[in-house]
Image (tube, rainbow, N blue to C red):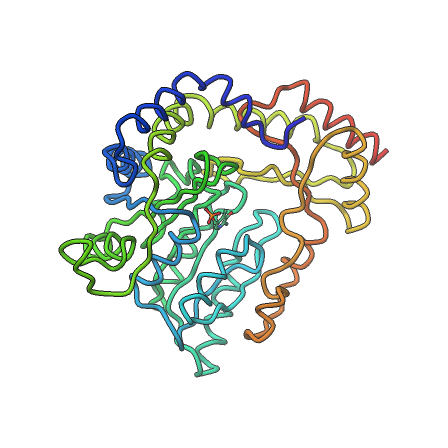
Length: 375
Ligand SMILES: *Cc1c(COP(=O)(O)O)cnc(C)c1O
């Protein structure tokens, strides 16, 4: 069994993908070819944002946003304690300080109440200026954007939506990657919408920021590439990846997002009522794009034991994530805050195989193996 069945996707979309890749190879416009602009338009339209600026990966996308806002030394950026490393890495990379915020165990996403506490503590500390909150749409579920946005407005923070795993999700019909003042995503192969290498994108409604993002993406260019008006990055999306994404975006909209939701709902039925297994919940009005299907077990020993038992059945599973951000070695010098929910999740989560291409038989095998272990 595959953890995320990208081979099956290629079997189905192969002829179209091959044609798209070959056309780029034959056309020789490998950097910023026409497919890049076409994809940016399609992505902006899908997400419901005015501008899409594609770039080299989801980490650069976040960093480009912080650079655009001039975030740097002395600034506090609020980041969930339970996320992929990039969400906090980019904060330190621009010289700002990540302040870690606890998450809600039911949604895995940033806890708005703890966010407000963290902002007040930072203001009281008087050493750092609160500037930005990074909300992460973890595992495909949009963060609590209405609540996060209220707090951000109250304390004059900008909102940065890390939608690397969230592309395709929605709240009340409004799509992920449109919730932040700036929003980002990643096209790493295993993300909800993935290419065949690294890729990313930034979304915003703000014209001025969009122009700055386009400049920072190509060496801080001014009127042309050889007129450099600021220090930027080399972070373009390859034409060949844009061509691949055009094909994959169509499949994603036409059926993949529906199919992965059907798979998640089947897991919900199959795993319902198994003692000690907590399945993920999708709050009212939300839709997930199921970057991961993550269950919670009672404690670390049970989780590790289940992972070993699944492995013995040939079923791959992953621990996303084993370490809270605040416990990462490199962040030892950062402000300390207690984030007990994040710490507990690191000990108890297990992500099961899922993709639009998983079969009901495979899902039954997973559920049976879990029942056997728990029983
Ligand atoms: C994957 C991921 C990123 C980084 O994306 P890359 O394209 O791998 O740089 C950032 N944030 C989160 C939450 C992610 O899962």
